[in-house]
Amino acid sequence: MRRKHKALAILIGSSLFTSAARFSYSYLRFHAVGSRFHHIKVGETRQQVRKTLGKPNHHDGPCNSDITTPVKGCEWEYVYSFPLAPLIPEYYVVAFSKDDRVIEAAHLTSP
Figure 1 (cartoon, rainbow, N blue to C red):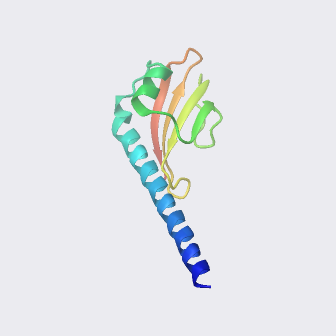
Figure 2: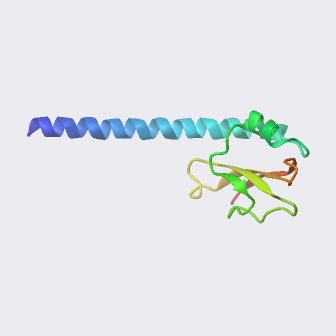
Figure 3: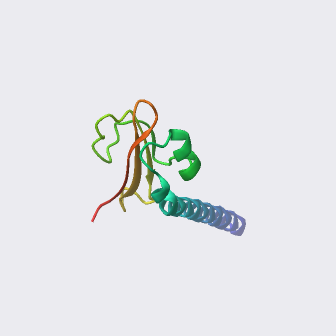
């Protein structure tokens, strides 16, 4: 019986450690996106944005996000979200035109 309890404790401990590590990584990555977001300018290419902010963690696809109404002329968007979104809604959204150029970059939060 003791052996089962020890194995269960190790399993639970490992799960908690893994979850904490993943959350910490996601939080640090989102913080890095926030600190670099002001560098994104209208007219930049999708590759330049990816180089500056990294791979989006929430949405990388056609402009049909449920976060915001797509900007006129938006063909593609990147959405970076806070690790606890939508519980704590904070997003960085970059919209691209059909020629893969930034047409809008917005930081969205909810009060």
